[in-house]
Image (tube, rainbow, N blue to C red; front, side, top):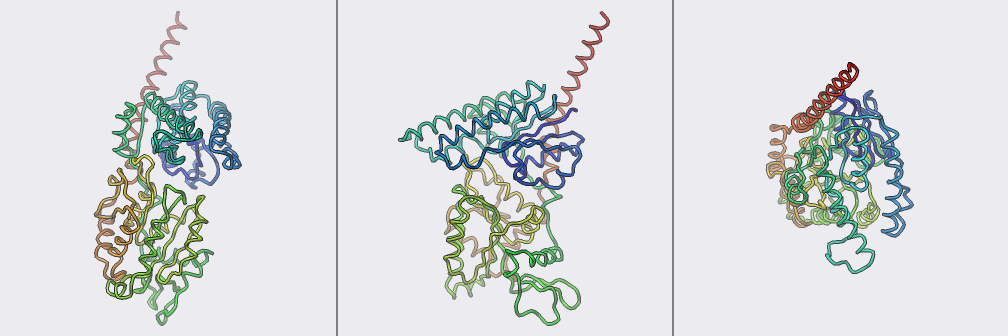
Length: 473
């Protein structure tokens, strides 16, 4: 089989699902050109893979974001309509077997991916993570069917056009993948696009459980991390103990012991944008922290150690709110973690919180997939498709800060000695291991690739027969 092109009009280092596609193709001996913005490093497994080459697209200048929305959109489109085809047509190999493209963003990506398929005699596979049109509607608050301002009307027209654009190219793709069954059904009803559900799964080589010894080693490493150092130093350490942190220590007999007074680790990852309302978590934490003493003692509520990862435009706004609150039982840090440390931090957590609110109601958050891959129970914001991922046996749903606070109180009561619900959820995750990425990919995507490869072989055979017949005549 000839090589594959994997295209994402975004940062290749922050496109985990497309990274996993690249590795799965390369692991089967298929050379891959990974096309996208090179704004951050990809995983070392990709960087060091001889079958993978990364082809960078220069991203639109950041200064465009300061312009009025319509002008910004037009200039970004002009930029992309120039550099995307130049990169896709001339910086990749002349022929390919497949072009696998992420949607969103679909404008102008799908058009140039389709043209590239025609030029390179490749088959188009679209991987639907969400809808470009729904993201535009959400970003510019275009829910009103009759926008009042001229700018809103133009943006609404663009969103409607994007929807038709997505459907048009979806019907022309050889195969379509999507992230949920609800999205698959919606694609069929909305645009008559036939898709195959390929659930996000975390790869076993990156997201997994850590035993007590491994967790302790990671905590010791974090003692040298500038965001963690002052918070991890312990007090009132047991006699003859060494390697002390607020979570664990090494006893005199050399064994690692988890402290009975350790705080509960709560982890969340957010993009610090309006579609992930950090205010819900912040308000819930305030209520938890200010619980009356009789309730705190009666329910044996623990202190919380809250780790929030991610970056985004509203981060400083919320950090100011965090700093303005006088916390008594809660520590909140927002560290930068190296790519190899993020899965370890997840595996050390006691509970995860996901604030993702889908713009379409149909996509599923990768951060929840990663948490579950590390056997960490998850509380997730409720939206239509989330039930396909988060089940009551190992998680819970919330709609607002009050719901989230009640879940936190219920789950953490008695921590770390007697937390029946939390222990039950962790046991469920550990005794019923989830399907990992490779197994899911082998079942749902690899058969499609094999079908394309078989057609390519037949086509080449027909061409050789035609050439031989022509030569003999």
